[in-house]
Image 1 (cartoon, rainbow, N blue to C red):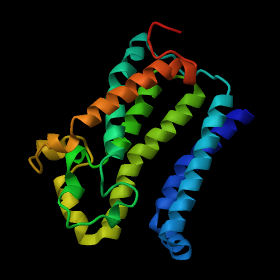
Image 2 (image 1 turned 120 degrees about the vertical axis):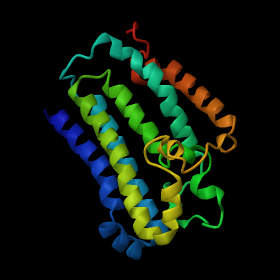
Image 3 (image 1 turned 180 degrees about the horizontal axis):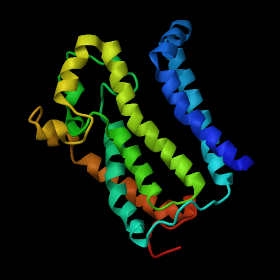
Image 4 (image 1 turned 90 degrees about the horizontal axis):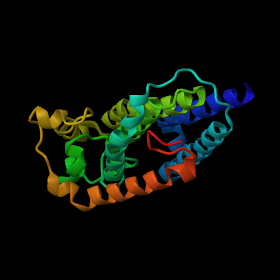
Length: 234
């Protein structure tokens, strides 16, 4: 069970490290001591080390079956992953108040708070990683996969709430218009009439880039992961 314990500790370190370093109780004194740039370096270092530890532990963990997914579940990642990849691509290519360093963006720029993909959700990247984790949880019933994917799912969903609370504290009144014209839940702000769809802000190149990334991941999945993404294969 040594490998499984390492897997659990690594995941706790990765997920817990994000929440702890992002909490104002720890973040504020660290930023005061290290400065904003120094804190970001520390944050990135902790995230990178714990992520590497988690992935290595996952690779070395024994296969312990917890449940056997029904066969039709194996078709679901093919449907979920294109959406996941698109949200991740759109999230990392769109300036946002909820991204790292987003509370320092120029509030006089009307396109910063809610353009493009942010009209759908103000947390596109985290929804992308949440869908990735969910898609893989559906087809992996072993203990190590449940720990890894479950940890990332908790971090993604909990991170949305955590980021919103931090932005409310750090940005003060500037957070109000962003909160009112965007939503955590995808499409909620659109459906309630608090904003309008911004197709131009998303552009044509983001969906094409996301499609290219998805195809590359699909083709390389068996090589990198060792398992075919096709339901009938492997």
